[in-house]
Image (cartoon, rainbow, N blue to C red; front, side):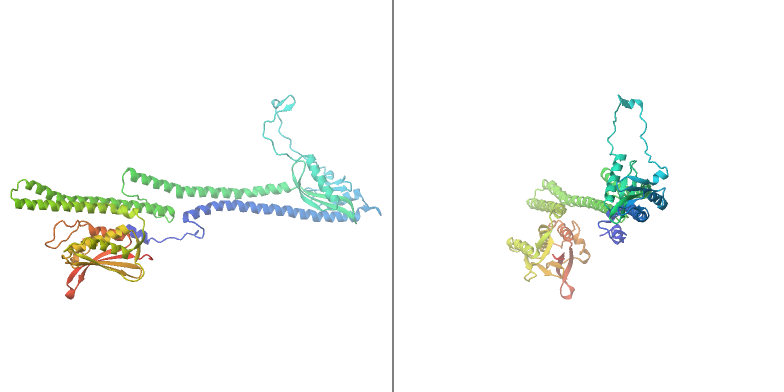
Length: 535
């Protein structure tokens, strides 16, 4: 019978998670979402800034290219002299460059002749020179014998004026061949510049090269890096928050569960009780409820074992008391007839003890057998036929016969279960029915196919069962015998074991009386219902 707690748990509504579209379980989805969120923020910020950087550089190249083509066109039209061998008027071209330079502070314009020599430079007019920060001064101890002892790790090669000059020369050579060259390169001081080199052409002749450089690339990149810092801080904050949440939602509850389990083990408590965790609608809540149910079932099992032990002690004490009284009286009785009666009592009590011990042993091993054997497909019709054939093979004159009425049909009647315990149900029911049947009478075992179930019945022609005892007969050690029946012939465990096996297979076992004319009781009927193999 289910408890109020079990009923409340079964009726507790399940809340649907807002992250149910993610794969996995609720807590797993939360872990995935929190960790992916921080990473997504960082990645999206980096992608946005990379796209911004690329767009700014490309926009700067386009702007410089447009400006350079305009200036080169004007120089070619206004500062070209000589026919048929044209040449560039360097002084006039220099004036044109300085007048047309859009941003003299943020840009640098240089004009080269056809041989690659500098004929004009905006930095000359502005008295601007390239600066390079010197390394920190070394103490005297760092130099020994004119040699510097460098104990640091080797650094990546830094740009030098020579490497910057080589990069500029390569750009000039391409421009002097008539190509428009644009891109990023470094100066001798290590600064990055956006450079555009436009050839100045008169018809097919290249008269010179105009180079425009934008020097604010490093400033743009530095601003972008500063803009990336909030994204990094947000990602770090999300990661820290997710870590704290995981610690609070997983690590601490698991630690509490472990400590509760230790208390159950060390203090020999009966059950784990953590109601705040059991109310959670995630895997830890499921685990807590499962542990509470498990320890509750173990507690009930311990109570059942204690009750069973008390019942066993009570049932064994009765024949032992009778044996002790008969043995003590036997020494005092001299009458042979009386001694024979006492010996008969002793024999009956020994048989009763033997039956009790056998049935108690079967009952105690039942749970282990049910948990050890795996369910499989059982042909119930063949099983009952084999059980009935065993009774027929051992039938003696005057014994109650057993008749089997099969379900008929071409297909076998199958159930999912354990063949040994299922056979024990029918043996217990048949033994019980035979014990209440008149000598030479008949017990009938019938099998029926239902829609999704299988029904088996065992009926007899005995005195029936009192209406108030239709459920009591399934209690342990309960026996109700008609007058004249042999005392101690049954242990009272057979029907209890049969119902326990039936419920372990998902079935039911109930008792009722067979009624004849005038509602007269003409026998007892035990009905066993089991789920079909396809249910």
